[in-house]
Image (cartoon, rainbow, N blue to C red; front, side, top):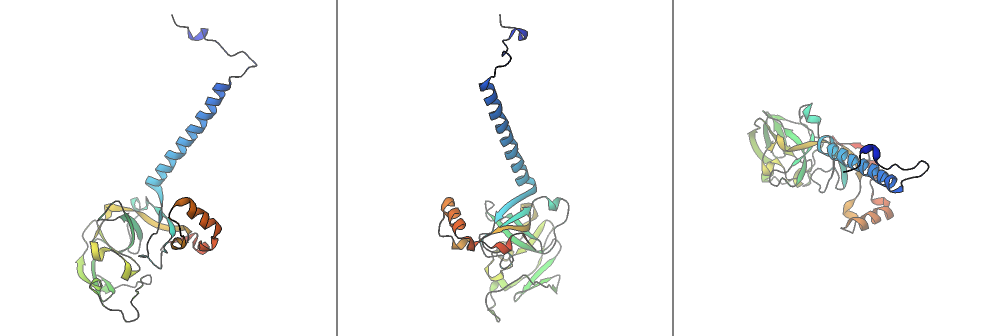
Length: 224
């Protein structure tokens, strides 16, 4: 017969059980690590996620090498507005994330006439938009579109760097269900194109030894 619980051997007073203590400490650290990982996953999935800007399609608003935070829950409480900068799954390859500005909302009629964007027949003011083809740019196919009615659940997206942006002029309207969140702040920025290494550790060492490539003035910049 097995031992009864009250018959189990006890550790004499004044002595320690080092193995038990060691296991208890390891267990506490393991539990804390698991909680931290789960909390980080919850935050990343539902609250805030970090992204890096790899291209110049949103220049000058967002620089190549900007690291931004994206609010993932805001659109559960507030509607999407024209001018919002959002991260979304690229419609032609959902393994990639794109970032563009909302130009046309559901119900809007979007038209582009020689680089001028019209919403419902009215030219809109776009101080954030830039063009790279000079004061008298050559008109291309991308500069003529519509009129196009944006249906419910869809958005018309454009990059601020208009002559270097793959956006709704090329791949069509965005399904609002593909939105990941709204960009709201730059938390870190560096001229990543100046780093001569591709692997992580040499790149980190290069940044530490060449702090001039860090754009200190962009830290904490609001995205709008």
